[in-house]
Image (tube, rainbow, N blue to C red; front, side, top):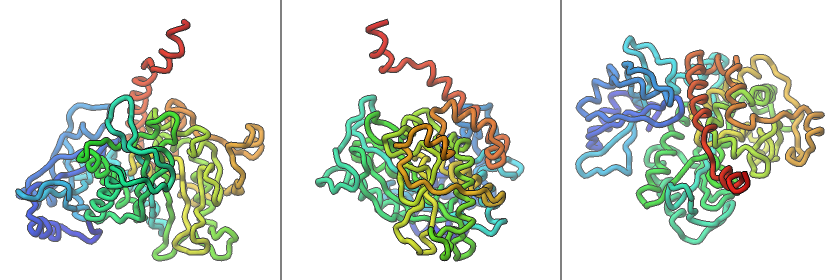
Length: 445
């Protein structure tokens, strides 16, 4: 995978690697990876004219009548799938931009939505870089009673077991596909792991995140176990997050860095932080889009709940990492609420949109909060003006539905379809009778 690959390069790579099939990948509104395959004989024509398909597959739960769409493969995303058999010919993949038959972009294509906001940043002279930390669990099966593979903790060097080999194989495949990995380690909860991708521009990272999630699951499946990015699979353990490190560069210069500031943060960085804090509640439906997401966002499990920022404190929504203080390129903002089951294209879109809103309107950044916000009383938080994220999906839907920022960032049609999808999910969830209710009420009512 190379940002400089063009159509001729793709055809040459396909010939050199004896590629027989190319999987054309795209993402639906909810962040599910979709795919259909073409033979190598169709590759040149597909890159020139696109490949038609049924567009109802991109709608999420809110399916519409069949409608014609065109998938335009992006040559820069061509990569061989290392886990597929090569004996009778290799299999490659390419991400696609979705367009209408007349050639205009489909406004509900998540990749297109991210590109629109990246263009907004580019007009201001900025390139948006992100480095997400996607956490996940390994379980013995995908049944209703998850059984962990290990009982390790944060950064534990567990004895040689399945999880160690699974993580190693996943990293090797990622690197074979041109996705750079910074490091991998055991996370806080039993059988919870993390592989951190090296930061890059947001579009390439969104493609990489979708690829990463598939590879983690593919490697696990081949070894007879199950990997999940479900935000909170174990009620008494930490959930899985996608802490997202982000920065804006102007050329080679980090716009977030100021050597003369005590915290090395520029005015641009402070306005960006203020934008994230101001709009955090309304963008949470995108960064934390599932009913289960809100089981993770509760006090006591290292997940942020309150709208505050700090240098080192991990109880805050926004943290400024200080691993390399004073290093220009290392200066960044870490937004800690997203979870790894989100749609990365839309999550990166709304975080950037919130930050740009702060920059363009020069939002005033509050003082950092170095106390543990969880330990404050409600009165203290109110005095300090520290609000909180929505407590459940229904609240997040209500905040997002009235958000002008989201309508602007996602576009009116995408915004409407997202709200429609989320209302369907909430309606399906609220009529369920849970095991907790049966245990709590059935014996006594």
